[in-house]
Length: 75
Image (cartoon, rainbow, N blue to C red):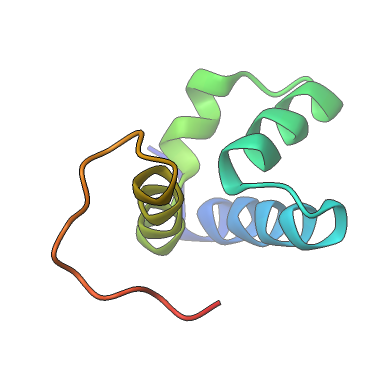
């Protein structure tokens, strides 16, 4: 089970990568794993609730998931 510190560090790295390279959050996670040699299965366990919500929102906007009735998160 990952610690809160590990989840926070991972989330900050993904947020930074997404902003710097203008990537989606899913692409940022894949890019991070490719650059660091981190396994995607392990990365999945480190995704925080707020990062999951942002990924879900992106997936809904791309029609990968049905739209939910929740409001959009500010970026």
